[in-house]
Length: 99
Image (cartoon, rainbow, N blue to C red; front, side, top):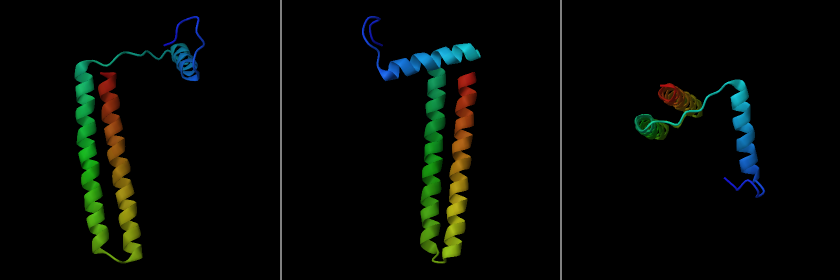
């Protein structure tokens, strides 16, 4: 961060304000351990692969159908799958962060 005498950037001021707000709310920040970082990276890689797989399957199904109604159903299913996978990923990462 900047020296104590130098003007602070908007970013630095915002970070300082958010940290103060977290302290007032009783939120404790702990740095992640190397094991936690590795676990989070593994979870992200796994879900990145699952999302890529879902995308490939989705495009394959889209090429197989020309019916607009069926394509809309496929789009909805694909969106639900992406949201589910993202939600699972985020929940697992949060669980790792909490220990």
